[in-house]
Every structure is written in structure tokens, then in C-alpha cells.
Length: 192
Image (cartoon, rainbow, N blue to C red; front, side, top):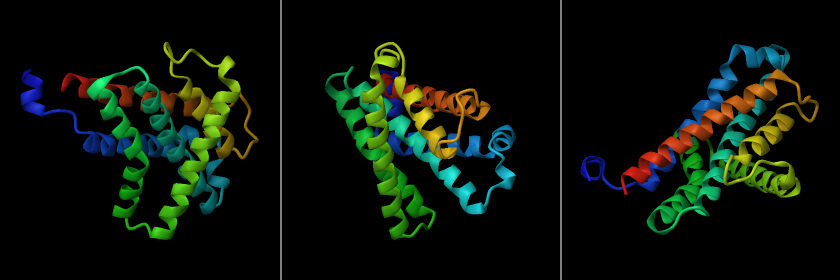
């Protein structure tokens, strides 16, 4: 009761922006990581290729948050389920609004929309195709692996190897995104 009075009820719009910003920050932290840069031979890449890698890291993190939220919807009822639906449906819009606030032109926002939708569709297909190989949704978050494999594949343009340290670093980064997402949802539940 005290928490409700002090913090108010969960605010899906505010939480969506916060969780989207955390995903972006996590992608940026990995992008700036010296070891990651060394593992992908960052300094030998063109500026365009470096930008593409950053974009893939952001898209990968946002897809994880989207799918993780979508999965949680199936395990909750009533008000919290509606809250989760609002968060899930707001993630892509929140990212566009953040980009817009940075002065990104509308034509590029449309490209981002297309890229995000493309990756969501691709990762959903990958999940369905490999579901029998993935951990149980109720016990683990299979989306970490699905998005990590997909993101790594796009970052390396299909030339990465499963024992690549950059892949393991991406997985660790996505675990942090997943944990941050869960913590935010736990706090939201406490405010119900």
C-alpha cells in the first residue's frame, strides 16, 4: 500500500520509454566495449559498417525486450496483462520517438520501422523453426538465444562462428537487458 501511495500505479508509457532507453544504453555499452571492438576488428571497418553494427545491436536488444514482454503476457492476467500489452505495443513507437527527439528525419524513422519489423518477423520464424532446440519458455528466456544468434549473424554478415567471443559477449549483454526488463516489471507489479 505504501509503495502505491508513494510511486502511484504502474505507468506503461513511462515504463516503455525507460525500458527502451535501457535497451539502447546496453547496446551502446557493448558497442563501446574495447574487447568487443577488438573481437569484430572494429578499427578496420568503414564508418558505415560501424554504424550498421550499432544499429544491429540496438535492434537486437529491442527485439529481445519486445519478445520477452510478449511472452510474459501469456503468464499474467487482469490489469498486469493489460499493462504488459501496452508496454509491448509501445516499444517500437517509443524508439521512434527517441530517434525523433535526436533529430532523426522522418524518412529514416520509416527505415527503422521496416528494419525492426523485419527482424521481429525473422526472429519469430527462427524461434518457431528451432523451438524444439530451445529452453522451455516457462523456465528460461529462449529469446535471449534467438536474438543473440540473429543479431550476431547480422553483425558478422553470416561469417561468425559459434565459439566467437563476440557472440558470447552479445549473449551476456542481452542477459543484462533481460534482467533489467524483469526488474522493471517486478517493480511495476509491486505498484499494483
